[in-house]
Amino acid sequence: GGPYGRKTYIGTDNVAFGKALGKLLLQLVPKGGTFALLGDSAPNVQSRIEGVKGKLDGTSWKEIGGGVSPVDCQDDVEIALDLMQQLAAHRSVDAIIPMGGWPMRNDTGWREFVNDHRHLKLIVGDSIDVQVGLFNRAYVDGLVGQLPYQMGELAIETLWKINKKEPINDIITGTTLLEMLRFPLDLAPRDQEMNNIGNLAIVGYLFFAVVVGVVLYFTGWTAVHHRRNDRVVTASQPAFLYMILAGILVFASALIPLTIDDQEGRYWTKDAQDIACMCCPWLISLGFTTAFSALFSKVWRINRLFKSAQRMRRVTIRSQDVLGPFFALLTANVIVLTCWTVLDPLTYQRVDGEGTDLWNRVISSHGKCKSESSAPYLYILVGINLAVLVLANIQAYAARKIHTEFSESYYIGILMVACLQAIMVAIPVLFLVQGNPRALYLVQSVLIFIASMSFLLLMFLPKVLFLRNLRREERKKREKDEQLQGREDPDDIPGEVTSSEHPGNGEGGNAPEGRKGERMQRQNSLRA
Image 1 (cartoon, rainbow, N blue to C red):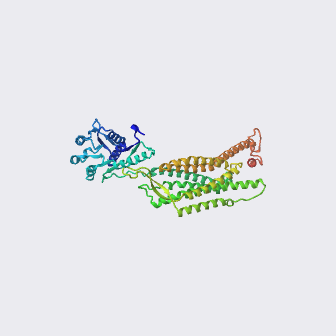
Image 2 (tube, rainbow, N blue to C red; image 1 turned 135 degrees about the vertical axis):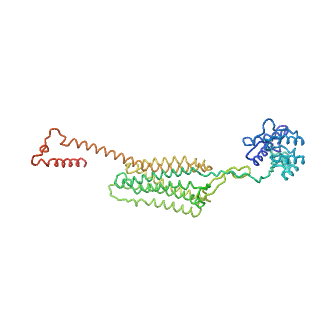
Image 3 (tube, one colour; image 1 turned 180 degrees about the vertical axis):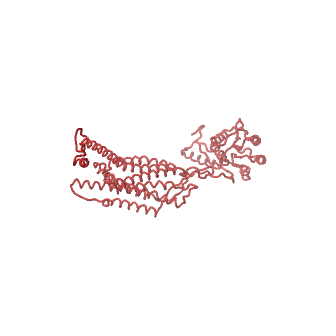
């Protein structure tokens, strides 16, 4: 049991009582001001004073200084009324909080005091009959009372448990508090945090612009060198390179619908918001499948050609002969996405966040794409696209010994490691930022951007560098051949006499042209 042999204490938690008084004042006037406290020396009253100060500490409400508050009414009604007049005389005081109902027990005196000081906010402890009557006539702004009936009921129940020798777990059993507050007609407007994306949408637009620029550059580079019949591009199968570029462009396009929300002042309608929600899975799934299926088909074709060459068999494998897996996976994605869109589409909804203001109004919410049962569709799409990833890795591993200009297995391996690391980091981060829409948007945008740029740079940059090095080597070889040719030119041999030195000789006039033809023949032979 407790001290003095008590099994438990049943009654009001006076610190909580004081906090309730402070909460009512905050509800009435959240902008703050200066308050004063009226109490006495009793321990329970001191606990209430502690609760009020604790609740208002750190808010815009401050207690009047100079030792003016709190004041002790000595549990006397008339002294309490006199002290109320003294506190009200301080012009800086905006609210007075008596810890008990002492001054209100003098009905007439209290009404006269209130009529003289209508500017004051008055929150009073206790809720006896006279106080409730004055509250109903607007002579007090709020009351915090006790429930004696509940105290008696809990006391009898506890005694019954003690008599039956049942354990009493709580040393202190606090009873319910009664709060009464006059609802103001000029209630302050709700200050709700909408958590819109806002200016962060610029990040998505910039990321998409960078991806589009890189895609256009590599598309032009592929077209130019394909027209020149450069080996590195021709061997890399331009049709599949164009498919990869198209897939990445579609994949990165998901950055645009991610920026659409219901921010006030923007021109997106509710229909546009709902369409944007369903665009994201469509763009991400179709773009991912197109890029990785093209990669799989491309490497598969190379593997088949090299295996046929090793068996000394001549075989022709056209690009369309290895596109079967691409069309099968693309069709599967389209079927699942169509069912999702028709049966249970994602819609843009505003979800209430945690916390309310002092009037129990929601203070935070965020927009989210939701549907009744989106999980099955997501699981199926993830399974399909994982199959694409696995197939691409299998073919890349089989092509690991093929020269770089024909196969990208080494760079595909780097790409897979990068994707795996991104997924391992992204999953816990996405889980942590679910309640923060702005952070969630940033994480999603960065992931899409990194995935797109990793794929583009690892698939195309090695080819660009390979071709550049090849051009440099060819230029060096050509310069070396020209130097060798110059040393073998007979015009450069000292002391040699030719007919060109005697332009007057009969046939000597045509000798320089003959030597020029011989020189051209030697150059052609060296180049060959």
